[in-house]
Image 1 (cartoon, helix red, strand yellow):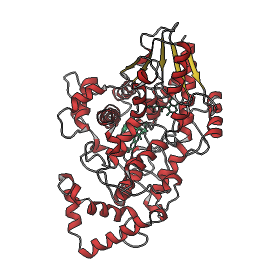
Image 2: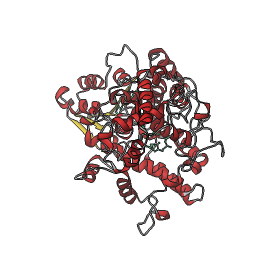
Image 3: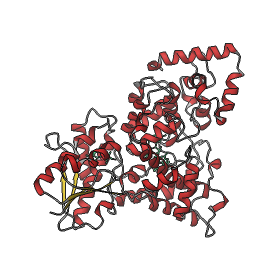
Image 4: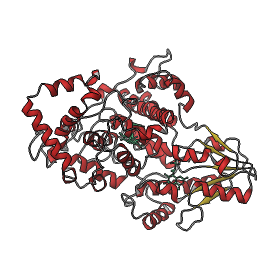
Length: 510
Ligand code: FAD
Ligand code: DLZ
């Protein structure tokens, strides 16, 4: 045999670089469901179903296409329980010339694979992951010499590089790079939010659901009502569904939250993008086509494209630029344990309950819930970075280290000292009230900052500002917050501190 071609569970693309130029008659594609990948975090049960089912469907498609595939289905008694053990077994059995693979999405596994030439005595060729618009070296060149990295400037480079939403003269369509100012509307039920795309489980998915329920019953969440796409064809239908029904309002309600709607106008495409079922350029081009056809406004399409060729590429660049040290950053010195209600949703804070409950049911919460509800609370309470990062890695169907870590540690927790974001997204209950209808159904009173029923976000917000004066007082984007804090009467500041101390001491009871 010539080569082993290793394809990981988040590399399910027929155009994967590892497959380029391969010899279908002699090379062997290797894919494996293994305990080590299924258990490095407390993966949501729906994430396990999604990955295993998508892997199984992908193998069927490869075989139909004439590839020879070695596929290991999960069983707790399999002798090989890690990717490395699977490869080691096959190296012994077939003595291939080399292992070919595509850059993986996580430092942990990347380190292991990079050592296989020593540990397994086999040459390993790691090819660049061409599923991204910007490769790792290109990002490093862009970042070189910059003190702070700003997504907005990186995004403009990606717009120029891809030509997306650019005029023939090289100018941004509509005369602006960014239409975010138009994208901050509160949603009050109209227009109605579309029902999300649904794919009912087929035989393969049903089998996997049984497997996950049997062997991963202790994992977070539920397999009930699994309806995600598990093939490229289905994921393309999900993309079409988004373009037809949600994209037109995506921009307007991008920052909105609702007590009654889990998905609002979001695309729910991240699981497919992150596993290779969809290609980012294909997705953006489809959205731009909708704009050209007059089926979606520019603020929506630009906002959507920015998330994908801007934020998504930017966080990946930062991950590979700064790992492995990045994962250990905790610059705000946080020491609070993750409150248990992050796992149960059992809290009287309505917004937190709603975000965590949706997460447990769907393995999904939209960006603003992740950033401004569960993330904001962890930031204000000073939860340990490692603990909150591990939570985000576990609970979402789209969570992979390269994208989860910079979003959580950098964007939410500001634990990297502001490398990713120029200021922390700290916000009081007022923001949640402005962007949602949660507060009107909450046990706590959003208009109060002190007293037994005061919204915990309010006093925690001021506590955060107060305790991090040294970190932020000189940040020009935070000047106003310090001015507001300083101009409050000393008794008021004491009362806010006391309420926040109580909240922190009794966090499990909130
Ligand atoms: P939409 O709102 O429809 O956005 C369209 C696409 O843009 C998404 O599918 C996604 O691919 C991309 N995108 C949007 N925002 C970001 C972003 N900040 N970073 C990277 N890509 C982005 N996204 C993940 O894919 N995996 C994660 O593990 C993840 N963890 C997160 C953790 C925290 C604390 C926060 C604040 C954000 C995280 N995000 C993560 C980013 C974002 O919340 C999700 O990509 C988005 O909610 C996915 O839902 P959607 O497909 O409906 O997105
Ligand atoms: C997430 C995941 C899970 C749950 N299981 C597997 C698996 O059994 N086999 C596999 O090849 N990949 C799996 N994955 C995806 C990997 O964890 C992912 O490739 C790495 O974290 C790098 O992003």
